[in-house]
Length: 280
Image 1 (cartoon, rainbow, N blue to C red):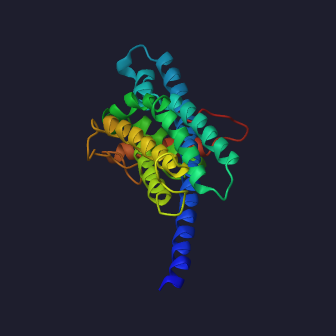
Image 2 (image 1 turned 180 degrees about the vertical axis):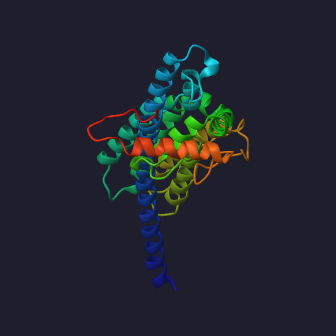
């Protein structure tokens, strides 16, 4: 039995190191994807809706006359998304930097470096998620009301959903990522800790050893991130009503649906040489 033990043990260690490296890759890749989602929210939805709301407001003599969306509603709908984009762009750069400085054959050191970066973020800029996460239920309610009561807004939202960068996702489908990102950090950190503490993956885990430092860093980061996540998500509705889907019929009556589809067609088929606003 003893001659077969070392190879078996070595195989388990190799597997754990491979999984540790994959989880490190996943952390960076999902952060990159998340930043792209935030960029889509800002560039495809927020910027044109903000411009459209200001244009509509300048033409209306009363706030009650606006049948699309007001500038104040735009700010409520998107909250601090622009701030979150800046925070996560910076975090992505920092996650990539230590990743490039650690030897690829030392996954434990790589995991520790990524964890330190996340720990700094959890104790600092990630706390800016607080007002955004805590107001998400109200944002869902506002979006649902706008889609059902404002046919011009519903048409505009449908047009933006059809843009290639939206990849067929509705605005709410994109926004929900902003309240899911912190819990995903927790899941990834748990995986890192699970693989890093497999015996043999890092030097002995005795007190004061490099292995103990790695385990401590991962545990501390997990604790910080988990505490932040639980604090922020405690106020969320555990089962929020997502409201009407944009596809195929988000409109309460046939007349609204017909008007919305006409509006979409008008933008998607502009006259030659024209450069119309996306919203009429």
